[in-house]
Each structure stands twice: as structure tokens, then as C-alpha cells.
Amino acid sequence: MLFETSERIELTDEEFRLLASFIYEHAGLYFDEPSRFLLESRLQNRLKEHHFESFLKYYHYLLYHQDRIFELNALVDIVTTNETYFYREKNQLDAFAEEILPELAQRNGKKKRLRIWSAGCSTGEEPYTLAILCSESGLFDGTWEVDIIGTDISQRVLQTARKAVFSQSSFRATEEYPLNKYFNRTEEGKFALDESIRKMVHFGHLNLMDHKMMGLIRECDIIMCRNVIIYFDKNAKAKVINSFFRKLAPGGYLLLGHSESLMNLTTVFKLKHLTKVMVYQKPGEDIV
Ligand SMILES: C[S@@+](CC[C@H](N)C(=O)[O-])C[C@H]1O[C@@H](n2cnc3c(N)ncnc32)[C@H](O)[C@@H]1O
Image (cartoon, rainbow, N blue to C red; front, side, top):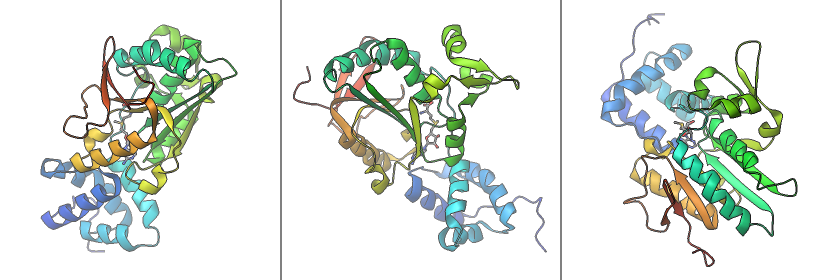
């Protein structure tokens, strides 16, 4: 073989354009010119594993090979940013526990059902935090159906989420109380989540850009989508936000990351000021 495996393979202008638009079309993730080097370095190992000497060959493999779906999953695992941890963004979680949950417990009191969706949940710390907060609230006894789902486009992070065993770095914002109450120390020095919380959350593979798959999500009371659409361009963001609007029950809440807003994207949500944070609410007849 003429090709020297330790060499760095260069991403040409044309290959960058093709791969960036392929990733954008598939996942909504936007790689602009400044992130070109990042894409080039993240994909080096995929090319080496397949013994491709150019990104164009890799691109053709993604388009036409019979195993393209497997490679697509590998590509997604590589190009996504999966940073997350328990109790991320305390002010918003306080609002969730102290203001949003009591309101929904009252509003849904007759049907006794609460459905929460963590969209772009990564390794699960976010939906599990929500499950702990629901449990700690004491608002939902055994007669309630509390359904928390976590979805992500990356199969690799979902595997970790389902195992529910976390390392120290997942707890940078966690206080002693929930750590002691809901986690058991493993022999490897990790932290295994208690079964009572683990069973409250179900995980699914879902690409937010996949209209058909989005159709499978049932009506939700709360959608939390934080630090996910920051990697999308305006069109992709608008598409996902419109889907969230359709998926929310009237009066349901959309919680984005603290640096994210719907400004210049849509005006269909009502901006609601809670004590410490602002949240988006889907208007409905009975909403004050
Ligand atoms: C930075 S993590 C955020 C995790 C968590 N929401 C938080 O704020 O801690 C972003 C996650 O969004 C997922 N993601 C990116 N594009 C996606 C898409 N098109 N559909 C579903 N998930 C996506 C990534 O795989 C990644 O796990």
C-alpha cells in the first residue's frame, strides 16, 4: 500500500463543502469555515480505519456503501459534542422544581399524567436529574404516570445513559445530599444510579431533524432541549423549534439552555418570567 497511515490526510475545499453539507442535511449540525480544522482532525481516524487516502472516498462510502448506516452512526458519535453533567444550570432547575412542577401537578391532577422530554440528552445526566427532582418534589405519588424520556442522535451516549453508571466529572454541580441518597459507589470508584430513579427514564435514538421519527414522540408537558440547537444554523433551529411547538400540550413548557433564545426564530411561544429565569410556554385556553 502506497498510503502511509500515520500521515495526516488533508481535507480539500471541495471535500469540506461536501462533508459539511452532508452532516448538516443529516443532523442539522453546522460546520462553518472556522470549524473546518476540527472536522478534519475528528475524522482522521475514520479514514484510517477504512484505509481511505482521501475524504472524497470517505464521503462516497457514506453515500453509497451497503454499511453506510453503521458509518453514519460512527460519524455522528464523532461530530457531536456530548458535554453534560448532573444539576446543570441550577436556577433553571430550581424553577422546574419549585414553579413548573407544582403548576403541572395541579393542572394535570385529574388525568394524573406528566410527560417530560429531554431532547439531546447525551449520557443521561439531564433526564436523570429531572427524575430526581420529580421524585424529591413529593408531588407525584404511585397513582401518577410520570414518563420521562431522553433522546439523542448518538448511539454511543445512549449506551452510557442506559447503564446509568457515572464518573466523578458528572457531579461537578451536584450537592452531597442527592449524591448520597441516589447513587451507590462502585468498586471502580464510579457512581451507579439507584434503580428507583433509573426506571423513571426511558431512552430512545432520535435525530431531531428526522421529521418521521419526531412523529413518534407523544404530547409532552415539558420539553428540555439545552445546549443542542446551539450547534444548528437558523433554518435547522427553526425546524426543530416548530416540531417542539407541535409536541407540547397547551400550556406546556420549553426549556432551553441559559444562553439560548427564540429571538428571530419564532413568536409562537409566550415568554414567561419565573422567579429566577425566563421560560417559553405554549399558549393555551386555560393559561394565565
Ligand atoms: C452538549 S450535549 C447537551 C446535553 C444536555 N442537554 C445538557 O445540556 O447537559 C448536546 C447533545 O445533543 C445531541 N445532538 C446533536 N444534534 C442532534 C440531533 N440532530 N438530534 C438529536 N440530538 C442531537 C448530541 O449528540 C449531544 O449529545
